[in-house]
Amino acid sequence: MKKTLSWLIWLDPLSIQDKLRNGPLARMGDHLRCRARGGLNIDFDVRDRVLGEKAFGLAAVAAPVSGINKELHGHIVADLSSAGKSILVEFGPHPSQQSGAALERTMSVTQLRDTGASPPVRPVTGQSLLDMKLAGLAITALTAYDYPTARLVDQASIDLILVGDSVGMAVLGYESTLPVTMEEMLHHTHAVARGVKRAFLVADMPFGSYHTSTDEALRNATRFIKESGAHAVKLEGGERRAGLVRRMTEAEISVVAHIGLTPQSIHRMSGYKVQGRSVEAIERLYTDAAALQDAGAVAIVLEGIPREVAAEITRRSTIPTIGIGAGPDCDGQILVFHDLFNLTFSAPAKFARRYADGAEFFANALGRYRADVAAHAFPADAESYHLSREVAAQLESNDQDGEGRSPDTDEKDASKIFDKLVAVGRD
Ligand code: KIV
Image (cartoon, rainbow, N blue to C red):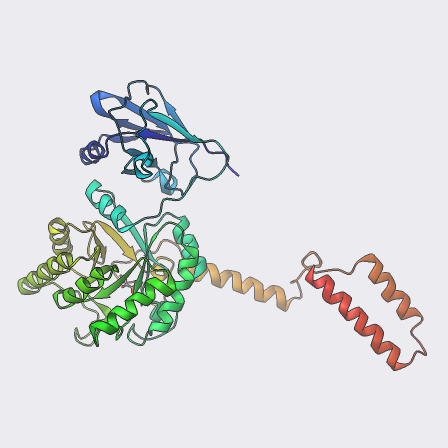
């Protein structure tokens, strides 16, 4: 395992927020330069960080560090995830304050551990998403529907994973999201939860699960948290859902709202159409977003609306906005996993970007597998289990004096050999 030296640098979290806004954090080659109070520059060497970890990923602290003094508190954790393409700086209270212990007084730069172990994972929470909005750091979000993809997405340091009801179309082959059931959503969310260590995990409430009564909606939302390990639920609709969002929030269930093109309203909207095109519709979206925010939503998905409208909602909102087909000015972006990898068997929507051709990748591998099997080239000898020399010799000698034996003896021997083969197979 890679050896990691980890450090905490104590700084005032508020001043960091301010400095982030004014852009004093800069990447300089393999160094991250942070100008702290009193003109002090702290350079972090980031070469030895653990890839993909948004934790205490600093391998060394370059001079000068002597000017850091006890006035500085809170912590800054720097990470250049995505192979150095982005810088994430998290800030929060000093861990000793969290545990009630005395504030660190003498050491400003603390080597936390040199154990060779990976740094601890800091889970993303509703509060971290808000901190990211305040700090101007883009929130990354993606859907996942099963354990392996959840692991991949989580390990890529995507901040929010949505088990969308898009599972119906992307994975289950339905024509729309409408047939998706509670049981299907719970099943997929539970699988995803087992693969997630860091991301904020949101489960989509399927059509019909929150439309008939508040009590039933609360019961269903509770199941996502209690039975499948979600951190929050998402539901579609504007101002008319505000009462429900409030009730869920009061019941300690975090809610992500979703407005604009809401696929569960496909029939009311007469198809998947960009929303918010008229002045009246735009005003409606502003009212919807404000009502959901006031009701306690922790974030709001903006789907299929003009860039300008999403930008204005984002500017007005105190909660993070996460866009899909809503332009680049939202606080974060979400896409459907299968759109990223060309696994939808249809032309991509205008807003989706393909990052890899999964269909081509799988088709190629499947073709080669088929050809190998057809040509008896798979499995090879090295991919086969073998008898031990002892058993092989025994088999051979049985074969040699096998003639003239009663069928009964043959049957007993065959059964012994079968048992041995099963044992070898298990090994
Ligand atoms: O179900 C889903 O995947 C979604 C996203 C498109 C936001 O709701």
